[in-house]
Image (cartoon, rainbow, N blue to C red; front, side):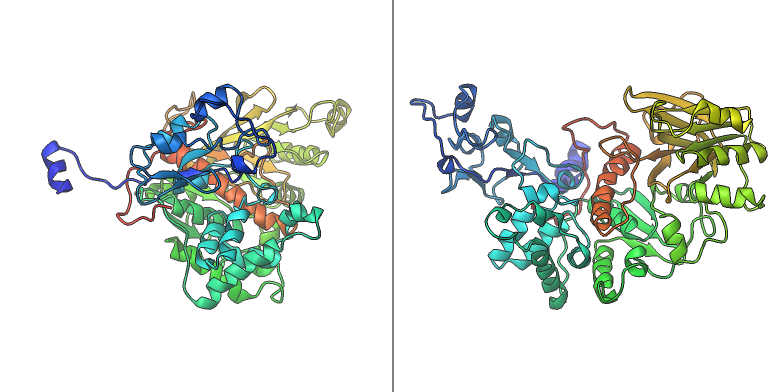
Length: 539
């Protein structure tokens, strides 16, 4: 019937990812130590204007039921604790409750929103969730475990973490350090409860998957099958994109498989979590190496809308025995250790273009700059995040070097790379304190970090505005920054595995909004999805 009506109207029917109202407060007015009663006021908006309601929590629910009365579908009722309860079968995601709540504790939620949006200080979150690198809703999955609803507990965990069984065995448990139970006796065994729920799923043999957003018809390639690449693929697939992972070795898992002993992390446990990612709809291609079997340009030409690079660094190369030649998974980009190692030996395996940029490295950057000049570079630019006062080098160091054409730029961070085909062309750096962007020519980029940064690449013509002096079919390579503006860096301990999950989920915003949807990030706005599969659970 719907299709027939749409044909008459000249439109087509598409399923849309549903929204649902989700209360975000767990502390009702009746639990407040101090209560303020205003006779004659029964509307939350009026009480909020008078600074009334619960004084213990400045953001808590006022409990007068304005959202319930405003709901046009009678989908909201006030529960026994004075908090709104949403009937998921009746809720249509119209947003009326969200608009009338003066405290913003009831909001529309969807799969996409929960993946790419972070909780804020205005939301009611527990100390353990705030300290969890992955941001898992610990309170909720423990509640589900206490109710005996283990499948739902696993779903809550996988909302933020695709490796529950793995992390349940190697997590250093920072959440337990901030558990309020520490003030009484000892913290709740948060991590072991997570492991218990994950092992319940594994022992049952029945895969429990989180909910997936509608199919968008867009394709994303992920290079690297380690924890970074697999986590990115998991969340991108949940956003509804067709995702393919390219791994250079025969087995997926990266350092999770090669650097952690089997007695601490059994291989079957790792394989179980990886299989769950595959069952989410992620395609895997092993024994397929970047630069040998394919290139970034060839992937974009094959119809991939975006390419995410998580190729790892020196540690992963040691694990697969690939240290005999310098690697450049990002066109024109090398690690400082390779540049000095092979450049000093005048090896034919390493060469540089006329414009060289070195990011970081302290005084070793000067050695690399001298090597670049010896190899024929006309200009060498060294970028330091530090100010001139805190710089590791001084003007006398440049004078002693005795090489012209070396430019040192302080307080600069790489913002994006632009290339054509498989060649690096330009580099844009930003002054984080002033947000000033400057573009300089670059055919070679040398990174002082021990690993390559995670990048999102896309066709330049997919962006709403093309940079000046560049023409299609150039490729744009954008380097992800965290909230402080610092480049993503690896922390070499087990906590880094949990943090990698969060960082790869955060990367989904860059993949989804900018290369695919041609939108600039807008605070409070989520990218729209209009296509979906017909069956989708409303949670």
